[in-house]
Length: 158
Image 1 (cartoon, rainbow, N blue to C red):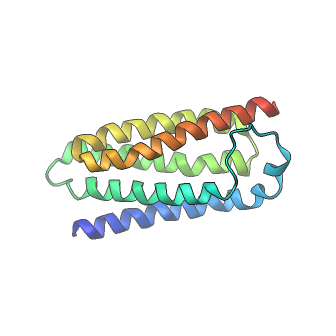
Image 2: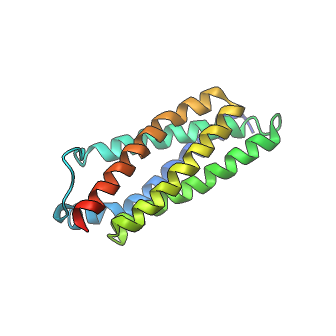
C-alpha cells in the first residue's frame, strides 16, 4: 500500500470517529449544554466542529505517516499506532461521557487519561516522523484547553 493510501485510510478513520462521537454531542448541545454553567473562556459552539475536523485530519495524516514507516521502524511505529488507537477510542468515549451521560466529572477523569495517551502517541510518533509529531502539537494544545474547560464546567455545576 502506498503512503498516500495509508494517510487517506487514517484520515477517514479519524473523521469517522469524530462523526460517531458527534452523534452524542448534537442533541445535547441544544438542550442540556445550554442549561449548564460555563466559564467565560468557553468558545462559541461553532468553533468545536471546526477545531475537531482540523484535528482529526492532522491526526489521520500523522498516523498515516507513521503507518507508512512500519516496515522500516517496526517496533516504534507499532507502539505509536497502538497508543494512537487507544487515544482515538478515548477521544470518542469522552463525547459519550460528557454529552451522552451528562457527566462532566467522569468526562474530566477520562480526558486526563486521554491527554496522557495523546502525549505518549506524540512521543512515539516523533521518534518515527518529526512531521507526524508536529501534527500532534495542535491536538495536545486543544485537549489541554478542553481539559481545563471540562474541569471548569464540572466545578461550576457540581
